Structure formats: C-alpha cells, structure tokens
Image (cartoon, rainbow, N blue to C red; front, top):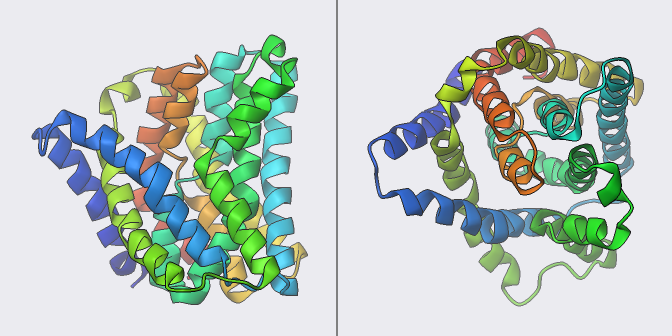
Length: 302
C-alpha cells in the first residue's frame, strides 16, 4: 500500500528524466523552470504553509528541536571524521550535503500523500528550522578558511537564499497572528500547487547517470548514511523527544529522502567537486525508490 502511494512521485521524476533525454520542450526550459520554482513557486509554498501554522504548539517546538539535533549530530560526526581523514573543502562539501541535505520537493510530496494538509503544515515548520541550518552548514563545508574570514560575504550568501527568506517571513506572520489577508493566501496557494510536480520533473531532468561511474565506494557510503542511517537516527531522536504521529512521520521522511538537487548548484557556485555532487544526487535518487518504502515500513512510520 505504501509503495502504491509513493510510486507516482517517482514516476514524475522518471518523466522528467525521459523528457530531457528526448529534448522536450528544449534545453533552456529546465534551467528556467528550476529558477521559477526555486525563486517563486517553492517560496510561495513555504510562506503559505507557515503563515497560519501553529508555531506555539509544544509538539511543533519539539519537532524543530529534534530536527536541529539530527542535523547537527550528523554534521558533527562528518567533521570529526574529517579530522582523521582530511579532505579539501571542494570534496568535503558534497559529502556533507549528501548526508544532511534533503530533496524538499520529494519530502513534501510524500508527506502530503500520507498525512494531508496537517502533515504539510508540520513539514513546513520542519523546513523553517532545517532549511536555514543545512544551507549554513553546506556553505561552511564548501568554504575555505579565507572565505570564512569575510563574514559580510558569507552572510550575503546565506540571507540571499529565497527559501530562508520565505521561512523567516512565514514564521513572522504566524507569530504576529496576521496571516495572509485580502486573498493573498489563496494567491500563494495557487502558486504553490505548481511547485511540487514541477520540482519533481526538474529532479528527474537533473539526473546524471554518467556521474555514477566515478567514486563508487564514496557514493555507496554516503548513500547508506543518508538513506538508511539518518532515518534510524531520526527515529531514535524522535522517540527521545516524545514525538509521535504526524510529527514523527515528518521527522523520519525528511531524514530518509535523498539529498537536494540544488546541492549541485551550490557546489558549482562555490567551486566544489561538481561531478561528485552530481553522482551523489543521482545515486541517492535512484536508490530511494527502494529505500524509502522499506524504511517507512520497518520504522512503522507509514
């Protein structure tokens, strides 16, 4: 039953992969579609979901705290491993992103199918905490010591992220109690409806099977960490925080999904190892077809 619920999402990814291979609509479409989604549609989804969210709910506060602990524990473990086996920032950045970043489009689509609107609201709150954190950690991991000594430039990179800005605006509206008046909520909801299907198509279009030929051992290790170890860690920390039901589902799903395709864009922008990042994104997305239903079934989160 779980696989039947999830397979249409992966079918959209496969459709995007097939369309780009057939050259439809054209090569320029996909880059433009990613930009529209990243800068407009997806921020609209986050903002509309967060504006009326129950941010003062104790369960929500525990969910956000658990999300921070999971991400920080995983990142700290990788940084400790780096002390034992030093690697340059260009390579360490993709490794860290492969472990702690997540495909937001896929995660929200799974949550929407399994838990409906309440699940999407909880997921948006999770993202409000996790998106800024993983972006900051990713930039730090990709940045050499010289860049870290330029705090203004670093802050500009972080605060220029449209997802972070949307999360901050949504949380501010929720705390103020103003919400989205005069039809603005409905306007943003209409924009948001296009975000998830377009995002999944773009995920498929961005897959690079040729990148799988390199660093096979590294790809397998990072994939096991992201797709198997992280959801187990999430289940354990969720239990420690007393989370159940929808909150536990959100925590586990966002820890079990593959890394974000936008990690490749960030890696290229900061002069990281783009081929390694492309391989991580592709291998995890392909493997997730089998691991996500398995993990949710084993952890009884579905």
